[in-house]
Length: 472
Image 1: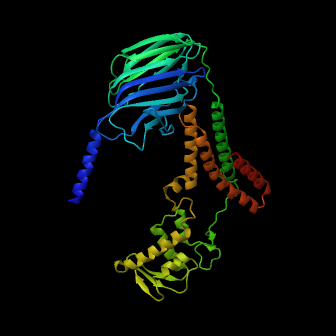
Image 2 (image 1 turned 120 degrees about the vertical axis):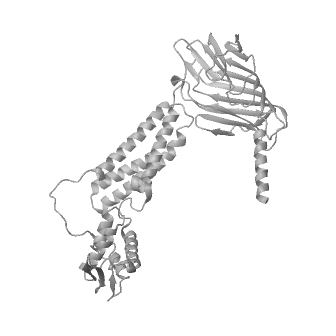
Image 3 (image 1 turned 180 degrees about the vertical axis):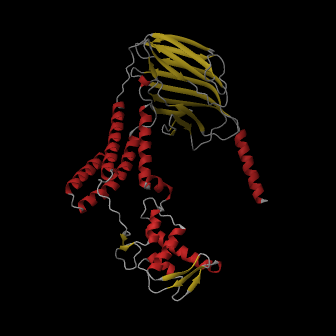
């Protein structure tokens, strides 16, 4: 009963939130000043009617930050001031959502009373002025289209660059793609600047927007592209670093060995792993088969281990396929730990028929062999027992380095194309991640070269690692 009551309370609270009336904009006034450098300063003054239902600390504005024209430069937005009922609010209460910025105009410590409240937002933006052959132009979505209630009145005033003559003005009111122009337009000259005004003749319904286009003569806007060359240089440097890294890695590890006389080797590899005395010795057939199958255990490994034990005299396999087989314990121990794990389940002098009655004993032998092989040789195969990332990319570090590199390239390329993410946010962390990947591999190579007394490659690699570290 208690759970049912809590569920009912939650449902009613969600329903109350969903049924809360949206804010109602009574008046939307925008003033835009276009500078001679192509940047615009926008001042939005909204008279908002806060409903009685619901709890409101303020409101927010979602403003797209996207470069409109290639020659307009990179789109960036800086919030200059925020006021609520004449009181200054924090200008850094924003969320960057990639191609848009959400600006909160609110008082977190107070609840707005029902009725009219005045919100004023001032911000500066670049990358919005279009430079065309006959004229320059600003096309601006004044109100946006995400409001849940109608906008009773909306107007916009555009101050053109100083000295620029009038070329033309156009406006649209309605949903995206609409060509309706229920807007009164006018232009005048004030203080040496062309001023164009736009005023909607009807309310703007939810899903609709007011868009204006103000044009003036050419030669009065000069857009600086400072900083974009640095972005191109950073991309080129990053690509060059990757090319050098992969070239050196291929030179050291990726080339095929020199062809020579092919000599068949019939003896098993020597290793200290799996040896009872801890000294290098031949690997058992089961261990060789385990590694040959990429650290995967198969029934053949168990059969190979039994045959190897029989060959060492540790056991005998009697019988045939028609009458059945019997496993008889012999004398001595195997030099291989994994084979001795089988003998622990076969006491000396014991006779073990191979049938269903003794199936559990053979199962225990098989599991003991598999466990010992996995423990001794599981990580000798590159990618073995390392999960999906190790199997696909060789190591988790390599995968993380690839992801970091791709994210860095995408972020810098997006910023250079007009995104809102500056390169300083990406270049530092990406450089550190890539350096950590490079340093880890190159440090192993340098140490190996010094141990082999190959001094020239060791010195060159040390110099390269030091230079890359300094650049990072």
